[in-house]
Length: 171
Image (cartoon, rainbow, N blue to C red):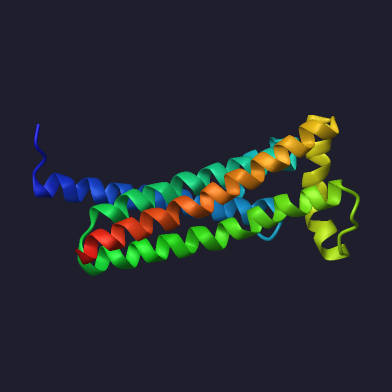
């Protein structure tokens, strides 16, 4: 069945709205987990025992939101497509660089290097959960390495997709 232009537009608008909602939800969850804001409907996160699991929830929410934005962006044409592709790529890069750096610092810290106080205060609660859940040093290094790989993929995929979409738009 072939969709008409009106149906395609409705789907694009719905995808865009879902992307906006998921990204707002993820960013509010990030602010809530870090105790920057008190949002009542995010109270379910208080029932999660590990701060690590809270971060997994918010990373998954934001990642799905970013992927939805990316899908929507590549279906558009002209300035709208270029603007949304560049915006989504910039946004995802800004959110992913701290994730990558955190996993690198987790490895550095686990290897015995003492982190500056401000970094230790941010990362220690999460690192404690990693150590509690995964217990053995080999498993911890494996998880941190997988986190670095995941972060690199989260950085590379939107950049590659943006390059391909922009290249198609030029041709």
